[in-house]
Amino acid sequence: MVMPIKRLRIGDALLEEGLIDEEQLQKALQIQKKTGKRLGKIFVEMDLVSETDMVEALAKQMKIPYVNLATYLIDPAIARTVPEHIARRYQLIPINKVGNKLTVAMVDPLNILAIDDIQLMTGLSVKPVVATSSDIGTALDNAFGADSQVSNLIEDLADIGKEKESLDNLDDLDAELGENDAPIIKLVNLLITQAVEGGISDIHIEPYEKDLRVRFRYDGVLHNRMNPPKKAQAAITSRVKIMSKLDIAEKRLPQDGKIKIKVNGKPIDLRVSSLPCQYGEKIVMRILDQSNLNVDLTKSGFEPESLKRFNRALEQPNGILLVTGPTGSGKSTTLYSGLHRLNTPDVNIMTAEDPVEYNLHGINQVQCRPEIGLTFAAALRSFLRQDPDIIMVGEIRDYETAEIAIKASLTGHLVLSTLHTNDAASTVGRLIDMGVESYMVATSVILVQAQRLVRTICNNCKIEYKPKPELVKSLGLTPELLIKLGMKNIDLNNLVFYKGKGCEMCNNEGYKGRTGVYEVMPISENLKEMIIQKKSVTEVRKVARAEGMYTLRESGLRKLLLGTTTVEQVTSVTVA
Image (cartoon, one colour):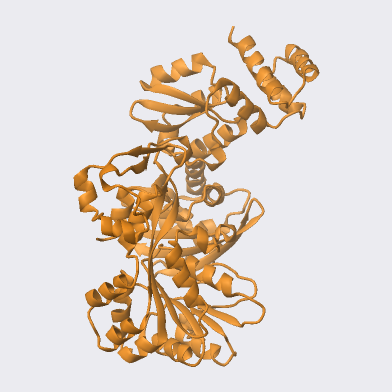
């Protein structure tokens, strides 16, 4: 009795959405009567609707959420809550688990028998959502297929000869395998494809004593992706090293390489790093997707006044503009955005990078190679003979690079670069510690900007709550600070904060996407004098704040009050 209801629902849904007409519905029902096929499949085969259109219409009719599994990161452990043969029989896959509730993506969410079976099998309450048959099939292949493929590869390698069973020999064997007969190749390609399609920034392949772990970094947070068999470790490592043109025989020293591939017709660069650890080589692949480069500074999270200060510095004819922060804080993206704004036909822009992360048309980019003597300092010297107007140096790491950068800025060039410091004020001291004279720092540096990235609240499950008074006090929120942040209309006694409840759209994390918090410190005449006198970091910061600088914490608090991020994110990346 379930099938007639289902047919009517699909037909009604498609009719209501205007995707089919009554005549087409009757024709499909006749075909269904002869063949016994599912009505939805018949609609797709008749080329009346796409599978996605049909499922979305069905979901809307039944008021059951539709989930696009192609962009959904599924924990393999959750996917395997239901045995593979059951999942394939019913065309479903578990995608999330919160408490005793299991969210299951299904082709047919009206299949009560399937839902009852899963509830009895797992002891969990099932929440059905709708997904396409092809997406569920792909997700099941990803969840159940990878490990079996790797295991089969290991068995195949073992059969070649007992003398080649050791892990040390797997590297050489892998180099000889062809594209068509190597499941290990398919596994690595699958990992990269999933990561690119899922908006992942980094892939970590980590060896331990008894297991191998693969993790994806999404929105700055690492998530466990899969645990291939330990025996596959050397083969996986070799495959990645071969793709990135690294020496597979060298296992004692760190190596860096690059992979250029196409995923769904889109060119992708991967920056690869191998590091010898206790139980093998750890591999990290940083995904550099040209289409993900945000060159619009207005969408980066800058406060209006901070952005004005940054843009004002970019408009200067000469001087050094420094962006500081830890690895992964978005420094390179900020510099690329600045270069994009400056990139006009009438200026000569040159960059020295290690590595070149994004290719920018109209800008001369140099890949530094320290092993052959092409360091940042060497590139800078050559730049000065190339008639540049604007220079970007990937990072000022030593006195030699700092000295040449300063000389370039003092001879009429605008220089952009990065440093690794905790905040804007301490950057001055870092340069002096490198050996640069304080008066040289004062006369050359025009702006220092520190930045961090915080996760943003998922708009789909955003809820508000009233914070406790002690929390407000611990954050340092005062009427004076609210005025400085341009939020004087907010009542401290009736504050409202926001957080994400968790939903399918954000993988039940409550966060989706990231934004920046910024500390922008222009070097004013007062600060120049303080730098020359080698005043302390505390004194420099105090004067900068008096001149209107937002600290990282204040920038974070402003985003907290605006409902962009949470208390936990602000306190995790900034200090009071």
